Amino acid sequence: MYLDTLKATGDFLTITRENEFELAPSQFTLENGTEVKVLDTGVIQFTPQCETQKDFVFSSAVHGNETAPIEICDELIKQIILGELELKQRVLFIYGNPKSINIGKRFVDENLNRLFNGAHENKSDNPEQLRAANLEKYVREFFTSVEIGRYRAHYDLHTAIRGSKNEKFAVYPFLHGKPWKKSQLQFLLSCGVNTVLMMSSSATTFSYFSSKQFEADAFTVELGQVKPFGQNNMASFEATKQTLSALISQKEVKYKDFDAKDFELFTVHRTINRTCEDFSFPFPDSAVNFTGFAKGELLATDGNTEIFAEVEGEAIIFPNAKVALGQRALLTVIPMEVNENFV
Image (cartoon, rainbow, N blue to C red; front, top):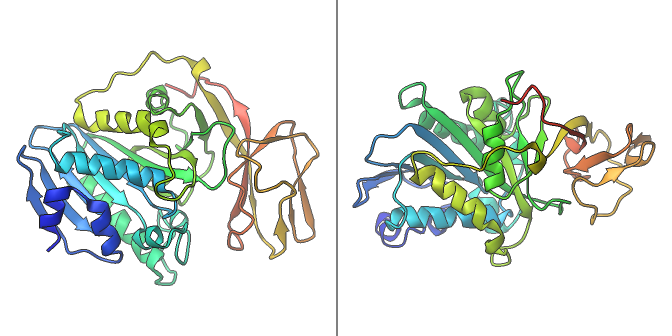
């Protein structure tokens, strides 16, 4: 039984990797009264004995080769189980795609972060499809198993395929007309993230699912560039780890006063999908996220169609010419300012 090992070491990551498809649910209580529930492989929930007001989801490994967030969550889980971090709020940790962790790839059969908010329905039963449905269920149960009116947040932690002009950045899901929150920008800044992309349409990402379905404060947080285990400079993620730790171990977290000058904000200008097998970019693989282009410069070639920058300074995000047909190959963004839509 894995529980003895988990209690002694706190190493839920290794247990997850050794049981990449399923893990028998179990539960136990820490000496400080925190209830620990293993819901599935890669899914572990902590409920402290004290009265709580907030519910947090920290997810990583939605793409298995994005190791820095996995290591951050691994450290936090160990600290909780070994009694080094005492909780004041409920928290659900998720390692999204254990098999893809083990093979060191972004996904096995299909990009898991394109399968949420119902996108897994009426499709094939590959492992990612089934996993997306299960992860939605665990998040739903976590948020709805307690009284209504509690604060909810879901921070889905990633690293990007490419580098970025700013090492760390976040994607703020589309809020369907609701205002963006300055307090959430302050949270990101405390994590070392000052570049934020405001989405303008629905999505099938994990963070959008929690934002839309449960009105949780949610982000996809990109913490740098993809690297193998052991090659991350964890010192560069210390601010992120300390901020996440504070969220779940304190009643309230205080941030510095809001200053719009601290942030670089962008809004989506357009989405470019791959529709043809013959799809390519004119820029090299070394081109980083937020690289800007002059109006009229070539951005992509899709079959016989050339796609050019429409506005001066139109910048690229998440370019990936190898996505499946019909999926997003590129986002372009333009700068924006803090305005009346922020509260």
